[in-house]
Amino acid sequence: MNIMKTLKIVTVASMLLFVGNLSAREPKKDNGGTKPLSKQIAYMLKGSAIPVKDKDLKAKIVFTLNQDQEIVVLAIHSESPELATLIKRKLTDKKMVVSNWVDGKKYMVPVRVTT
Image (tube, rainbow, N blue to C red; front, side, top):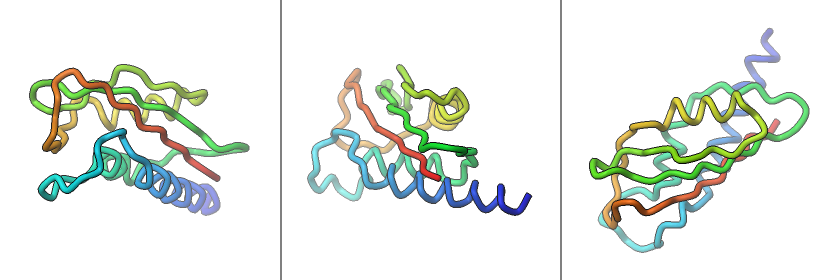
């Protein structure tokens, strides 16, 4: 059982590295100390245990922000239903901090979890 626990920890660490390095297609400029959306999402997914067996897990998250700057998940494209469920549960209605926020703008963030 220790191998599974270690695998889960390594998986989460790998996911955070990949998500943290991705852009949420947000302009890259000094925005007054606001973290990019991809880094905020990586933080929200931190500590999630996702079992990875034979191959890497991938997902594309499509979302928008409502008038209260909370995430509204529009779609999660993934071959792993467990990954999609976890992402939706962790992100739905979570408050974001965005300085150049536009109501209704769609964002796409790819996520990759490796073994």
